[in-house]
Image (cartoon, rainbow, N blue to C red; front, side, top):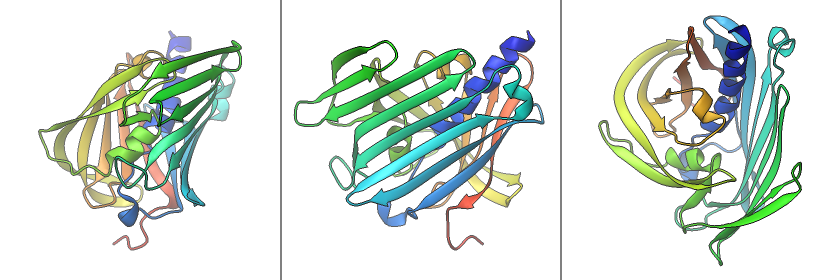
Length: 254
C-alpha cells in the first residue's frame, strides 16, 4: 500500500509539470515567466515543480520540471523534464503551435525519452522513442497541441462557468479530443495571499501519468493572466496538493 501511494505521489508530481503550464494570450502574458510549486501529500511535503516560459527569437519555449523530496527519493525518485517549443504567432491563435515536444521522465524504474516533431504542412507528427529505438508518424489536425502547449493555449480562452472547451492533444501515442470543464468561481487563501479564482477540471483520458491520479482540479486567478495558484487530486488514501509558492509571474500583483 505504501509503495502504491509513493507511485501516486510521483505521478502527481509529473502531472503538475503537465498541467501547470496554462497561459494567456501573449499580449497579456508576462514573458519570461517562472512559476514555483510546492507539492504535498496529506500535508507532508512531497516535492517541488517549476515551470518557465521564455521567448527565444520568434519561438516560445516552455520548460517544466519536477523533483521528489528527499524522503520520497528513498522509495520512488522522480526527476522529470518536459519541454515544448512553439512557433510564435502561428495559426490558429497568437500563442502559436508546437513544432517540437520533448519528454524526459524518470519515476522509480520507469524511464521515458521521447521527442515529437510536428509538421504543419503535412499535418503529421513524428515521435521518436530513444529507449525503444522506435519511430512512428501519426496524423494530426491543424489545431493539435502537445500535452504541455495545450494548457499553455487554454488560458487564452475566455472561461465561462458551466461551459466546456475542447482541444486536440497528442500525447506521443495518440490524438485525443480533450474536454476542460469550467466548474465555478471561488476565493481561496494561499501562502501568497487570497485570490479570486476560476476552478477548472480537465477530463483527461490519457493512459499512464494522468490515468494514475484520477480527477484533478485547478484554481486559476480570475483575471486576464489566469495564473494557476493551486491544484488538487484525491488518491485512495488522502489527497495531493500543489500550491504556487514563488517565482516571477504578474508584475502588478495587488
